Length: 568
Image 1: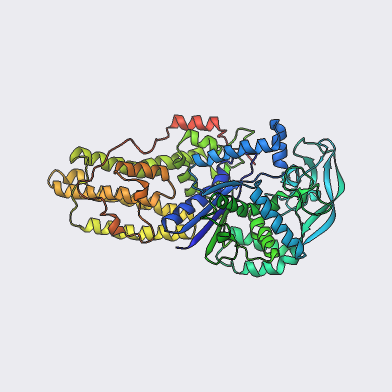
Image 2: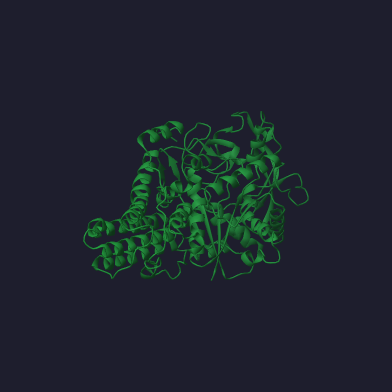
């Protein structure tokens, strides 16, 4: 057994993620964690809320709350949403924790001692109307490189180029909309990325060519354009105060302490059971840990360049990311999700409309791995009705109802294989091998195609075998066919477990089994898995697994969540 450390982009505390956020990092990290556990790996899956920065200060101000109370409230809200979405993290922490403060201070001290921190006087945007320095993401304007008119002060999400706020054209405050801005001088601390660059280039060479193109190409683009020193402090009140003389009234920039949060959250987890857990077993001086990160392409630069450089600059043997799974964007009807404009469906609302597995399956089937993809309710309904209800759900109901009515609510006797069973097993072996190959490689879209194809094999088998016709002349043979089909239900459940855990639990319950009865996928054998349920084992027919989405319900959803096509 090896150790697999799994992290995803940490969601900002001030808003509940929409479906694009879920599929960009949180959901695929959960599917992979579940799959790795079923492969017998020792998994530590870490998630948490990113709580510092102006986003929290402004959010609290608008809510009429102090920042800490605001973060406490939203942390609980995030946690419930992810639990409802069936995320199986081992620990859900916070970047504002004392453990993360300890880790941030330690890493900063090492960087400073090693000569990678420098002081600079910089020009920063001050809003006269808001009476405050504006954090990068609270300045919006036109990108000087691509002309995108909604670029933020830290990065243009259209061309992904990192920016300084003073570079923006027609800059305005996103807090008040005011353009009554002026540039003032202020002192800040910078991480000297050019000085770390030789170590970073050498480290990145080890990631070629197996990082996904989305992640590797963005990292190389940054290096090609040349690294610049990166400011790591801000003129704010909410954050970790900087432990350096002359900078006590400043706090660390959220993008400095947030990635360190992975380590801090691991320490939170370890501190809850110090006799059996040690955060260093996962992060410091270990060679048996594989670290896999999941995030949207807008976060890739910080996790492929800035955070690795931060750890390299300490000179300490930190665990670095081994595989960075970067995803493109999921749009809504071709435009952006927007809570304020009632456009698009957000995670906490989605699970109120349909069970989490509907969303989990659709999102993983359409994950924007190589390029952007779009969510529409038409596509969602088509997949639910065809794949879930028509292929998987129909097979389960058809088999159990037929067996119950023709033979009884127990598994019929097994029979000798005919060419039909031989072909079925051959096809399943090929499909299962491909499914495992793609899951191992985190090529989830291809993996889900294979999973659906596995379900289709069952439907093809029962259609070719025709037990409803065979039973008229050979009841034993019909029973043998249905024995294979009931065992297929269990096989489908085992393979679907990383993606649809709630549905799988319902499938297993019909067969008198529990999730704990599932086998390891490490030595999965189709022949063996098709003979697990023995003659006479009881089952229940149960209710249909899925609800068909009617045209009327589809129209209702479109109206409720702004289903017309919108521009960006």
